[in-house]
Each structure stands twice: as structure tokens, then as C-alpha cells.
Length: 310
Image 1 (cartoon, helix red, strand yellow):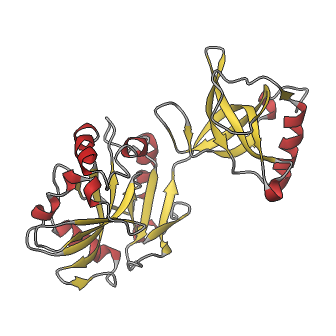
Image 2 (cartoon, one colour):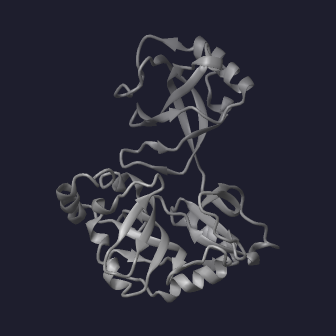
Image 3 (cartoon, one colour):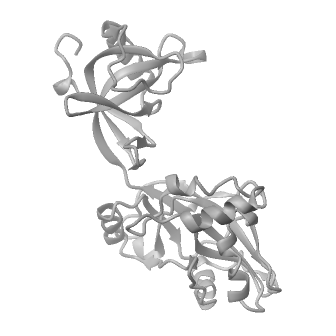
């Protein structure tokens, strides 16, 4: 079951919702037949059990009970926050168990258990979220590589402020009465992302294709540090057609043969511009190299843009 992007429920309705921290990892269904074995499947249905050997003892921790649980596999940073860039080092290793075992000691994975789908031989998808949550917590699954994160009923505004202040990706709001809908993207689960803003300088662009022919498909942006322009990412979403057309004219006026970044970004067919156009982008987090992820255009900053181009 997937969440639909949306706003925080209103204060008058938030007591009908539970709020969980949005994890930034690999979604997994966890099959525990109660015979000491475990099977992990990704959203695609691929068997990824061998990629995460540190999760195998969960099959013993649950004892003789059988369950199918919904969870998210994450790699935690020094502050205990899920870090997708770290987890990427562990993904795709299901066919290389020896390497997965080596990586487990360097970048340990942690399984966040979020919901119960099947328990003790019967499906529980028809039960409301509040009851499924009680069943999940009743399993008492807390170990070195797995846990059941807290869910807060009501107090959505406070949970949101806490997530924002802690540098978390956002919240998942779940209606207390919601049933589990396998494979569906439901409006009874709402994904609320924390969006941060950054001022960036456009240093280049990549031409669009199809209906975007002649217009920028993406702009290459950077941030100024120590008098130099450091590449911060490629932004290809967030414009209306009119905004994209106006930006195309500004980019043409600022055309240059010289890459303005300290290091040319990995963008085939890039066209460079004088670093005079400043914009504001939304993003949720940064990579260890400082790149914005995933950036989306917010607005041009004419107050910070060179007068000859504004």
C-alpha cells in the first residue's frame, strides 16, 4: 500500500490520523512463516533476502508465530536518521551474498516495521489501521537490526515541526480507520514531505525533447562558495509552460562557451550560460557531496538576477 502526496491534515481532523516518520529507504514485504526462515521482497516482487544477512535473525525473534509485515529497510546516519545514499551501497547485492555479508559490517541495514498484513495464519488487511498497529506492536519486535517505530495519534502539527527541526524527510499520515489496500496508492495514507528552499545560480541547461524541443528540459544549478560556483544538481520539474518559455529566452541571452562550474557536471549535451540567473529551488535533503535531492524549481529570483537579463 502506497501513500498519496498531500498536505498535513487540518488541526480539526488530526485526531483521526496517526503520524509516522517518513523513512527514506527500500520498501520491503517481510514473510515470516514461523519456521525460522525469512523472505524479503522488494516492491517489484524481487527476492532481496540475501542482500541483508543481518535481518535473518528476525525469523528467530518472532518465534513460532507466522506473519507478513510491511516495512522499510534503511541505513541510519550518525544522528539515527535514514540515509538513502548510504543504503544504496547495500542495494542490488541479492545475487552477491559474500559481498552483502562484507558490506553488512560496514554499512549495517535496519528494518523499520510499519504494518501487519497477515498474522497467525489469517489476513488482517480488512482491519482498521489502529487495530493492525496494536497487533504489530504486540509482536514486541525490537532487535539490533529491526524495530517498530513510534506512531503518534493526533498532534500532527507538533510532529511536523519535530520532523522539520530534526532534518527528517517528512511524515506519513494514516487514517486510524484505513484498511490495508495491497498495491494501491490510497488517499487514506498521505505522504507529507518537508521541503527546504535554496538559492541557486544557473550555470547551464540541457535542451528538452518532444514537446519541450527548443526549451530547457533541465537547468544545471550551483551554489557559490569561496568565490566559485559548485554544482548542486539538475532541476527539470516545477515550471509551467509559460515559465519555461520565459526562462529559455533568459538562457539564450546569457549563453556562454565556458562552463562556470568548478567541475563540469555529468550532463550530456549541456549548454553553458554566464552565472547571472538566480533562482530558488525546493529540495528535501542533500547528498554527502552537497547535491540537492530531489530538486524542483520554485521561482526565479529577479531581485538577485543581473539587471540586463531580468
